[in-house]
Length: 502
Image (cartoon, rainbow, N blue to C red; front, side, top):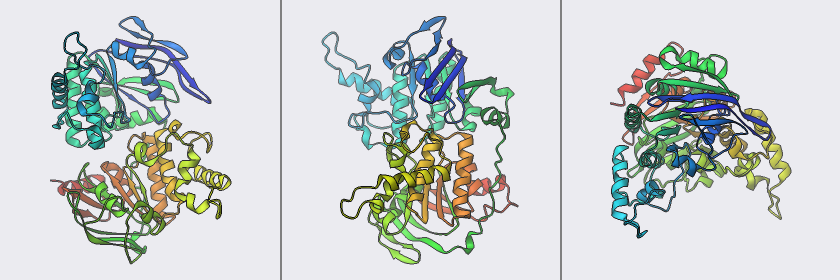
């Protein structure tokens, strides 16, 4: 039994945890949910020795645990699969999995590399990842890196396993494999603490759920006795309306971007579509279906092998991301905000204004004007309701929802008329998700932005898009029109989308 007794932790200006007492039993999958900033990550870091509580104690089987580091946690059989991609890019898969448990030849201290690779291969097979163990990590996709992290935790043979948003980069098949592994571990008596913002995963996998709000424990319930609506109310203190946000009347808008027969070999095949001002065009499909790959071609990140792109009716030659922004007013909010979308160690001000530095730099010295930077940052913080102590706060200290708002604000500050927004609410809680949905919809409705919304979350894309293109096997295989028609039900629209996926 893992038990927390009256655990509290305070950071400057923030009470992250306030007297939290919780019990996690062996042989159960226990969900931990709450809005961004509710205290989940702090609690996990205290359990694994990455942070020390100001008050309170952590006990295991009646013994008080005093961890000075993550290594102490591993020695106690407690391990974590982090939401962040925490791998060594230049090392191999085997080295990443076996880093803290390298097998040596007797007492010689010489590493037995064949044995290391055999052990790593066995862990890869458990997570369904058929890759050579000698593959260098930096060559892997985000989903494969996440599975390597899961494999590393399995190699540690932990008796308490914490998973923080482990499915954010995984395909449906990979999620099913992971859930099978977790159920097997539960049946073997392992304590599993599962942090997720995806309610469908919580209800499908977990036995119990504990809810944190503003650093306090709201309650612990058996999921058999709980509905989704009740869980939302526990998290945020109110109900969330999941109906479509309203009609967009996009057919009246000017055509902003058109693609004709675009090809990127091995990534995109014969893609044609158009998007208008005031429209939210959804790109729906599973991870790897070609949605993000098409977006990277549109912004010049990847070379176009064939086809033509038109922006505002004129043929475009987009050779780089800088081209897409400065010449054509196209902004791209990456699905991987941690690695590609944000400078986490930099202040909010820098992240908001970095795309407009050339415009606010002095003509002679070319130094960026701090005054102009700060003014722009404050305007975006107020306009998007970014919850921050101010423009100088480090971006890494913001919640996931507020980090995503900073990503959006960067391109709004650059005054982009065309926005490509990729998986906008990955790792974002239900309350912040609702805010981001309304923000994206308002950008199209009231500010006339042409928006391409890429999402593998069907309820999300049905809620805010007015038209959806369905992707499968690197192609556009179907189109669903009139998504914002109030006469159409979610069941009807989801069934129409599903017909194109099989």
